[in-house]
Image 1: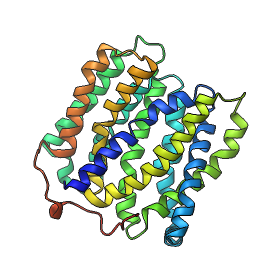
Image 2: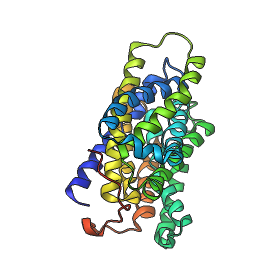
Image 3: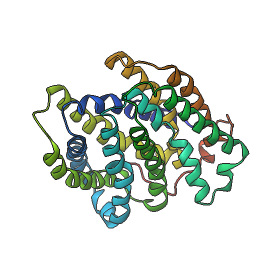
Image 4: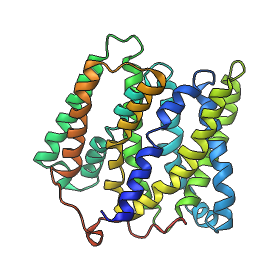
Length: 304
């Protein structure tokens, strides 16, 4: 990975490491559907004028079925599932479970025809990663906030997140990323706004409102621009590898800001999951790939 790739990787590690803290703060006084509606409305309000000024909306609109598909698997489903799950789950644990994205990414790559995606080492990594998740969940079972349904919701998020880069590289090549993000985010906002208004009970706190605004501007608008740049720079398979670092950010913020406890199961399972993800995604290779060798998607143009 070249220097630009590493910078984008570091940015995504932070930008999608902090949402778990912000979601936890937001759902304290705002309904999950309203959190999704709020963050996507704010994000779309930021991205739409920029995309329109750059002429990025028309080419994205021409591919509207796949733009909507991207919005469904990257925003509509995950944002709602995360917001609902974090009504009970600790933010740090949620971030760690989402780190299983590379495990599911390897399975999807295999299903798509890449037989090397689940060779012996990668298959072993998949088993190790699943064992790590089991350690985390079982080790946290004494905490009444950790339920099987909430864990299943977050693992479903990981599955959806692992699909999104392949939609971008396979069906949205040549489409400006900022146009895709702006239109898909707008569609999700339109979908969830009436649901959010119907489910919101009471007046949100200033802290929760601030968390939603940050989710929209920083973790949605800015993050998706960087995300598309990262896919363009390093390819869809490597684009999900920042999820190794996201849980470190999530766990650190959850512990320092929300005083969340670090259970023995989490402390033991955390490195097991990361090792499993690394093996499943890389096959155990530590080779630094030259920019010319990177498996780029065809021609996802820069979003600047």
